[in-house]
Image: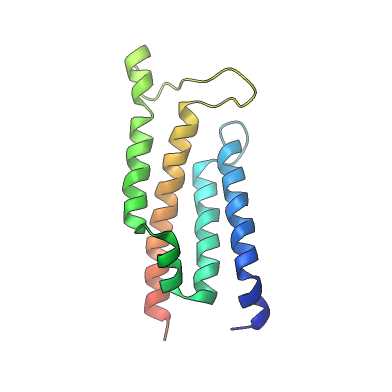
Length: 133
């Protein structure tokens, strides 16, 4: 493994993870959101797995990627219930007034973020385990 890439992988990981959270939070108003943010977070963990190995990434996660998929799917499904209660229409989103402009669409995006992160990590970590010597 090239020494420069191995040394900088932790810096890349942190920058990519912060970038993925930024993309997640701006997604309901501008391009981005849970899907793109989840892909970027999975790329961050993949970069770390290339240099440190799959075992270190699994220890860092502390949660199996399949659990992330389940939790994310539950969050995304539950985010539609407020609209069902108030408007009799599932996934009609509620919004807060103020500078942050948060709402149930943000909760939905967080669920999508976790689903994409968990799903891509399942695939990538399994592939890295197969290829690793």
